[in-house]
Length: 121
Image 1 (cartoon, rainbow, N blue to C red):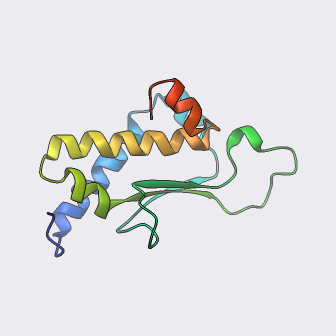
Image 2: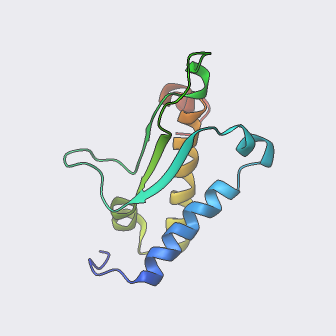
C-alpha cells in the first residue's frame, strides 16, 4: 500500500512519468492534439473506479462550429495507479504510460471497443 503522506519527490516522479508518456508520442501525432489539457489528480470521483478519464469533444467530432470552448481534459488518477502498481516502480511507469495513451486515444476519437479490437485496452 502506498503511504498516504506521499513525498514531493514521489509526486514529481509520477508527474514525470505522465510527461514521458506524452513525450513518447511521435511528434506528428502529438502535433495533432488540439485544445486539450493533461492533469494529474489524486483520486477519481467517489464511486468511479477509474485510472484515467477523458472529458471533451474528440477531434473526430469537431466541426466548423467548434470554437471558443474550454479545453478537453485528460485526468490521470495517481491514487488508484499507485495502489495497484506502486510496489513495482517499473510496472507503475508502464501502467501510467498505458493509461495516458489510452486517454489520448479517446481525444483522437478512438472508442474503448476499437481499442479492444486493436488489443490496446
